[in-house]
Length: 403
Image 1 (cartoon, rainbow, N blue to C red):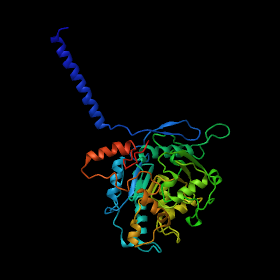
Image 2 (cartoon, one colour; image 1 turned 180 degrees about the horizontal axis):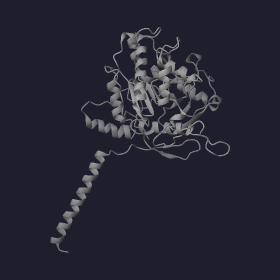
Image 3 (tube, helix red, strand yellow; image 1 turned 120 degrees about the vertical axis):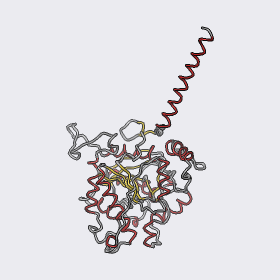
Image 4 (cartoon, rainbow, N blue to C red; image 1 turned 45 degrees about the vertical axis):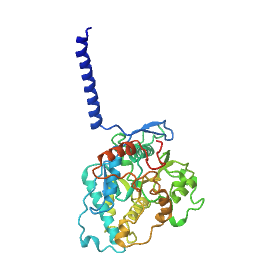
């Protein structure tokens, strides 16, 4: 073939290559690469690829309880941007004097927090979605929340609460009359099988914190006697870096390091992050209003604890150690109510948090500000999304974590 004929063919081939490259670049720009996969191994199951959750962690929506002028909101939004979470932040009403007064024994800050939670629950019930995650705006989480932790927890919950075969070998659906088992639509299993999931808390220690954490305060048989599932999770801090009370609990229960539990709730404290179903939200709005509270209940999280421990209340399940913990520092409630006392859980874990520069029970989180970015710095944000949020690289000095 003459060189005169080859030139148009070469130009045509070059043009095809250029078109393909442009297409691929555009496709990657429009459809960013998927989040990294890790591996799941649950009792009785083969290892299976863990597919990252969607931007609402597998729930219908994520609601944040936050006032518009909250100084904690900017940091929350930056963390959500890096991990690519889709948040819904309902605008809080202007509460009247009537709303805030007449609740004996409760400080103004606690009343505001209680009203904020109830307002967000109403938004959820009116939304039409079937499940929702709620968290407060001072929560911290690990960079692998979406790519690793939530998928592991979802699979564990789905496995634990799946309908069990009866002795004849058929599937028992009595507890699940409207069984919905599609894991793509319901990552945490049939919403009829649970009411509330404690994904963020300040501890479910199986007893009052005043009872102590000496050796033998709980025993392995306490765990085996309770509905639960355990699974390996490399994002769980090693025992020396867990909150001292959490480490004591797991050690005494005979739980190996780097293991996370899902168990029926025993004595859960705090409501940093919790997921509920529509039916549960309706129940909570009816039984957890300030007007319906018992005289000895002075906080929203205590009201939920009572519901979880009541036979006619909520079916609650705890993820232990938790996925969300509040950032060390003064809470909005204590700031409003002028409380100077540090809660015992915070006081016990404060020194460790300051040494680690991490929130309690969080391995690589956002509290230190290591993953912050300026509002218009899209280049840094994209870098953080790719390397930190999707690949799970800690990118703190000496902390480039293996996946």
